[in-house]
Length: 83
Image 1 (tube, rainbow, N blue to C red):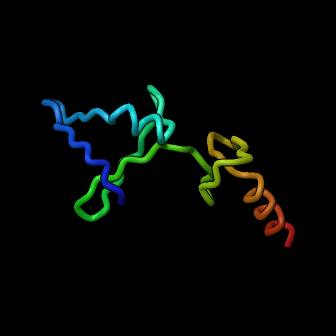
Image 2 (cartoon, helix red, strand yellow):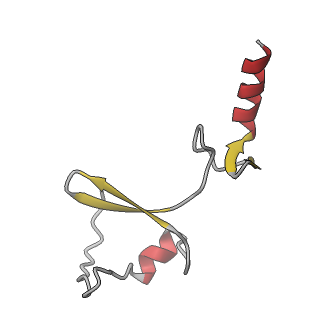
Image 3 (spheres, one colour):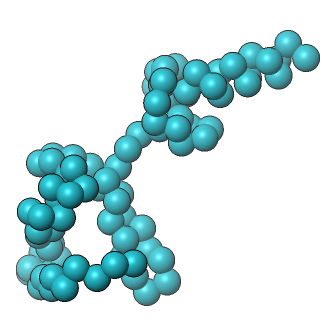
């Protein structure tokens, strides 16, 4: 991990502000969803990108019964069903 040297305090509701410079660098806009992970004793924030339910690919997605599936996984499923 790379240190930014930026320190923020939590407010009374447990919120922090992600500095504008970091949001801009990571292309995080107002109302974007952020995923929260725990890694040992660290909290990791990541811009949420929806992807294929099988491989997490975020390109060439098709919505099927409220689930995102990439074209490559659809092709693999179709090939497996034909065998």
